[in-house]
Length: 331
Image 1 (cartoon, rainbow, N blue to C red):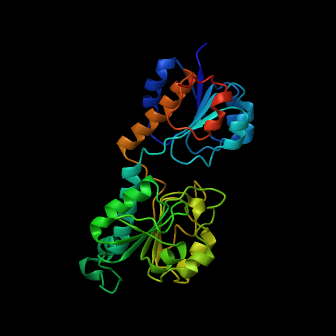
Image 2 (cartoon, one colour):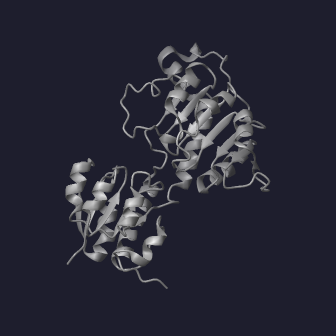
Image 3 (cartoon, rainbow, N blue to C red):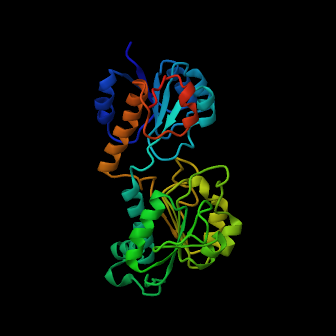
C-alpha cells in the first residue's frame, strides 16, 4: 500500500520538488487547505508521514496520527512541533538545520548596513521630498573598530562573524555553551552583560527554548547603548516585544531590524511594525530560489529515508530510533 504524506503548509509557489522526491516511494500527497488544528487532526489520521512548515503540530494532531512514522520540518527550528509527544508516540522528528546559512547571514549584514547607512530613510525622503531634502544630521558610523555582538554561535552566527569581519568590526560573542576563555582568531567570547554594554549592533542566533524565551527583556535593554541596533532573524519569541517597544520609544536603544515577531502572521497595524526606527521583513531571511529548492528536497528526502527504513540525516529525537514505528535499520 502506498504511503500517504500530509503537507500541512508551505509558503513557496509549488511543491514540484517534493513530488519529484516522494515519487520514489509512490507517495499519495495530501495538502491541508488550512493549518488549523481541527483540519490537521482530521487529515493526520491518514498520514504515514507529515511535512510541516509553520503550522502547529500539536499533541492532538500527533495523537490522531496513528500510522505516522516521521514528522519532517521544513526548516531549522522545531518549536511548532510537540516533540515530546512525538517521541512518546515513537515518531521520528527531523529538521533541516543548515540549508539557509548564506541567506540569513546576508540578511543580517544587510539589516546592519541598511540601518547604519540610513538607506531606507534617505531613499524615502529623496523619492517623496526631493534630492536636497536629506540632512546630514543622522548618526552614521564608520564601521571599522565598532562592535558587533553575536548571541548564539552556531552555524549562522559563525557565518555572520566571518562576513562582518570584512568591515573591520570588533566581534563579541556570547554563547552559554562556549566558555568565555575559549580562543578564536575571529571573535572574542564575553559575558552577555559585557556584550550588551559594548556593542553598537547585536544580532540574535539562539534557538527558541523555554530557557531563551524573552532572552531580550527590560533588564537586557537597560544595559544596551542608546545608539545600539538589535537584529533578530532567528525566532520572534527571543524578544519580549513590550520591552522592545518601550526601549525604542524611550530611546534606550536606537532601533531594531526584525525578520520575525512573536506572532507568525502579525496584523499590519502591529505597533512594532509601525515604529519609524524598525526595519521589518516578513520572515524572508531564509529565502532565495536556491535555498527553497534545497529545503523542499531535503525535507522530502528525510521522509523517503524513514519510510524505507533508513536512518534520517538530521533527527531531533534520536532516542526514539530503537522503538520507532518505522523499524529503522541501524548500521
